[in-house]
Image (cartoon, rainbow, N blue to C red; front, side):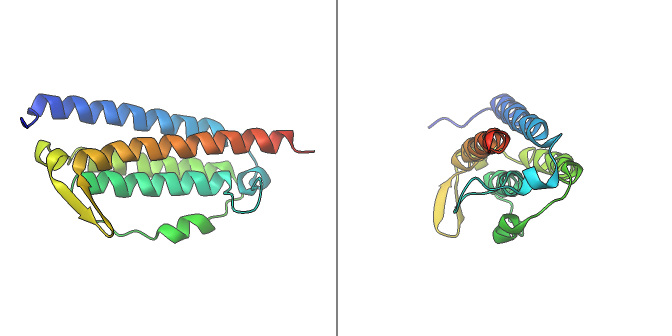
Length: 156
């Protein structure tokens, strides 16, 4: 396999950054005008609120991009599933705080990272896999948050 050139890695990082930022913009749009009840509402048992989906998405994104760069970070995954917020500005601030932190981790992804096997508990994948998984994971939860918002608006 031919290693990627630095220009290719730069282009890949920029593309990933653009897609992640689009996901963050979608999160901002979903939460911007909701009250605490809407942000904390769950459509059913074993489902998550919009607040949980946003917090978990950002935390997972940070972890996955860090892993792609082979940077170990502290993470309390379960804490994201307990989050409760009373106002949208708290989630908007979280998005605004996490976006540059994730960008900084993305800047650390190298060509070598993309092809190297990087291990985290239970899994070993190439850095490219971790990076692409960050994209798909974020978009999955953005879609769930958008649907949860729709269902909240249609409840009787």
